[in-house]
Length: 181
Length: 186
Image (cartoon, rainbow over all chains, first blue to last red; front, side, top):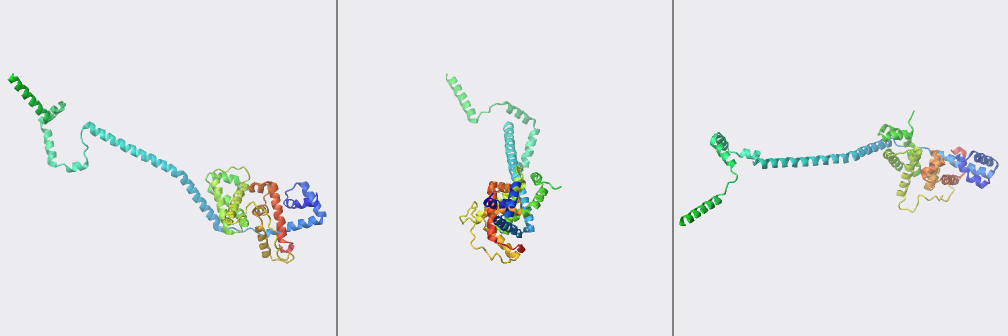
């Protein structure tokens, strides 16, 4: 252990970062070597003077600021979790409502088609003439009306006027031909 | 008995803000003082402290106690301090990795002169601020927090030998800068 090695390790010696054996050896050397002792005193004096640079207290509102920032962070973390969940829920609800609406509308259309009746809206009801209703109600009392309805229901196909006229003409033409023969 | 830092982190992970406040009360002051001594600016040190503790909160969910809590905590402090220095020096070509100890242009005042405590303190602060960043942080962590070379090496991401060398060079520089001081002055 020469003076150079001792001086290179003085700092670690001061910080107790050496093995016990090395610490004892340096202690012994410094006691007997003027040059190394001077260097050691100079370094340790400078090191000790750093104690003058004492700690300071942070401002009291720093703690408050940190806690506030963390509360905000906590809220934003909660939002980061809840926002996508809410978006998914909203989307699912929209799909449910959309599908439900179209199902209902289809059912209504199907019902309208099978019954062969038009859907009566409130607007239509408002425009119905009261006299017309009374006439219809009186019609229901008439027994012949039901017979007519029965007859109408039994007829599969009602020919158009043109078809009837054409048939009549054909019948007349064939009877004329027969009479000529 | 107070919870250990690691136990507090586990409670914070579960959303316990009381545990967070306990951790904050335990470490806020030393973290602030590290940043303050490194940056020599109270407002910057406050910003760094706030950012450090927000990061601690954010990291609590994924925190795994692989080393001492303080080693992890001061690694965050170191990163934020170096970032702050980089921002300040963005116009200059200085590197964080630069470890060149500045030359002593002037030995300062007459070393035999009896200095007031305040004058001496100012000289100490000036001398520390003249140190390269890596050396400055190493001695702040060693001198004012009593961290071992091994812990400082983990925080700074270097070898123990590198820390030993940095602290040694910093002490040599400070001894040179502060001159021979009369014992009565401190």
